[in-house]
Amino acid sequence: MSDIRLRFAPSPTGYLHVGGARTALFNWLLARKLGGTFILRIEDTDVARSTEESVNAILEGMRWLGLEWDEGPFFQSDLFPVYREYVQKLLQEGKAYRCYCTPEELEKKRELAMAEGRKPKYDGSCRGLKEEIPDKSFAIRFRAPQDGITAFDDLVKGSISFNNEELDDLIIQRSDGTPIYNFTVVIDDATMKVSTVIRGDDHISNTPRQILLYEALGFPVPRFAHVPMILGSDKARLSKRHGATSVMAYRDMGYLPEAMVNYLVRLGWSHGDDEIFSREELVDKFTLEGIGKSAGVFNPEKLLWLNAHYIKNGDPARLAELLLPFLRERGVEPTADGPVLATVITTLQERARTMLELADGALFYYRSEVLYDEAAAAKQLTSLQYPILTAFTQRLAAWEDMTPAGIEVLFKEFCTAQGIKMGQVGPSVRVALCGVTSSPAIYDVIAVLGKDETSRRLERAISFVATQL
Ligand code: GLU
Image (cartoon, rainbow, N blue to C red; front, side, top):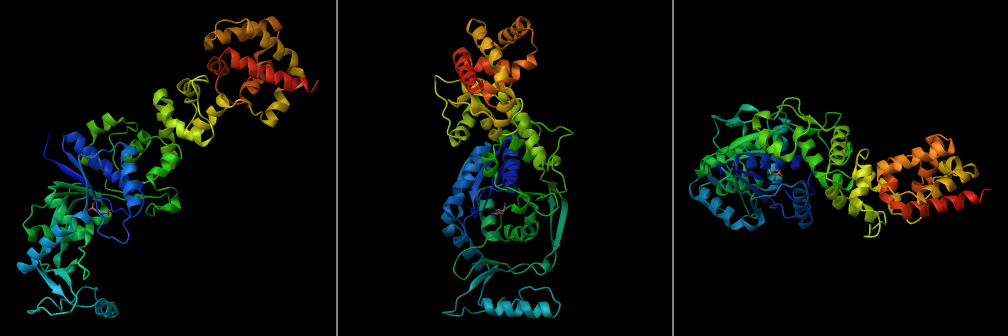
């Protein structure tokens, strides 16, 4: 075990976004690699925007990706007394002060500053107040240093510094008594002993404010690693305009968690030119040094390619488990007397790119009545095929070896005996069994369906053809 303590600290105001998931993943990977601790903290101080539904969506997304946490989930809404205690401490030490300015006054000052071409910054009117003003509501501000610089060595971006002059006397507690993010995050990261903060680089400008708070509170400052944002193909920050941004939407579109994990990690991290990483390889190879300085562009085709890879190489029994909900959505419930789903999958996984394609591809195995595609039937199930289908069905009835290789032999012998080519029997049998002309290898299909079901489907096709005689 190492002492490294990492955390993912989402605000529960929506679903688990792919950007958030990647941040979680980087934290999780480093914790697992170094034998450290991964903490989950729900930042729900914004009571109006935080919902339980969103908390559940985030937890579901984390579980789906396999990012199990070691501590938490902690909820900031349970910690208000702790924050209040630290606000009091800062007040008592003169490191924070009551600000009685009303929002309207602040807005006016802001407008004036803008009009005069100054940077809108709190003017410090309440900084020097000696007395409390009774019966007037107040926010609490941090008394930030007004000169000097605050610098840190970012583990991704290198050294970063800010002039303190640029930083405001930050409000740490609103007039309604609720604390704000920049304050709660410091208290929590300090009390939860987080040693390294990995988060999106949209938080870089918050970091100097937080560092000043750590220092004022006498806490050790953690290390920071700010990860570049994820962009869409037009180089704008990834948003719904670019397609789905919710991790769970990808599950619903038929993506596997391992494809998502592999994709997300590569979107910002690299290890040579390698593209495909198992979870174990990621844990082994992941380092913060491998995180790039520039933003990754979300590429749906690459995600699809990875998904196809993981379906193709996936364990059929596991894929079967994941496929069931998709089949049920399509009104199919595999039963013990039907084809075994894992076997069905072995005939389809070579070509399916998503679980939706896998589910659609599996349907014909389970439908009691094959749906003939009109064009396919018009070509392959005509009166011309009647003698061939009938003869083939008879030959099959007497055939013993029902393995794919055995069935291949059956077709070869049948063609020789009839003096025909495979092309004169294969496509018709295929339409009789599957309803369409594209399907898995016909030998595999027959082996999976078994002799009885194959014969039943052939008989039905023969009756269909007979109506045209
Ligand atoms: N709740 C913040 C967010 O979701 C967390 C930022 C941080 O990691 O410090 O953006």
